[in-house]
Image (cartoon, rainbow, N blue to C red; front, side):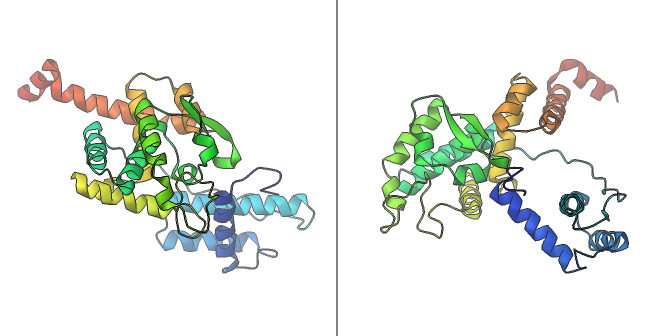
Length: 290
């Protein structure tokens, strides 16, 4: 139902499966009572699990029991009166323009096939705001266009247009010239942009993380600050700081709800406040008087 009727993507389906199996280790899902669901959530809280993760697991159970109730498999919904744990949404981590410049410059120094691939990865994550799952799933057909955008498939199998900057276009052309180095010998018809000899025929999300952290280390950037999603956050934050309207940023990121996009206004505002306090003459004068 989640796949056919709601269009949930493979990653969403896998996450729901993990959450339901986790609960199945606590109680029989087909017979579980409201008290058992509460007990499960209490156990998660006691273990120190983040409130956001607890809320996600409860959401999976609500979807599941809503389905059972709707299909007449159960006559009640044990999650109906249970409140989700409240969590303050943390501000996303971002990289400074200087950090990104350092990483791009370091990648550009390596003209090997691996270096050309890494340059393209950074250009597409930061220049296009792609999710790492979207990057991993990109096909050759999607990038064989002379337009300034490429079509990507995001959450819920929804398609959107992602920008392809001139720098990313140049990096793409350079990488395509050496892509054959990464294609398995027995998979000449490999359709993925980032082909790999690993299982599945494409670079995994974990491998993207490893490559970026290795690049950060070489560039003198703290690897703990770097991940594919951090580059996506930087893309959005720098757009907002540059004056882009939220609706446009929402479209570029593929957010279903603009409330998700609004968090970048807080990040931009906090950074601008810091700049003002550090650079504005009146702000400096106030500091001296104190």
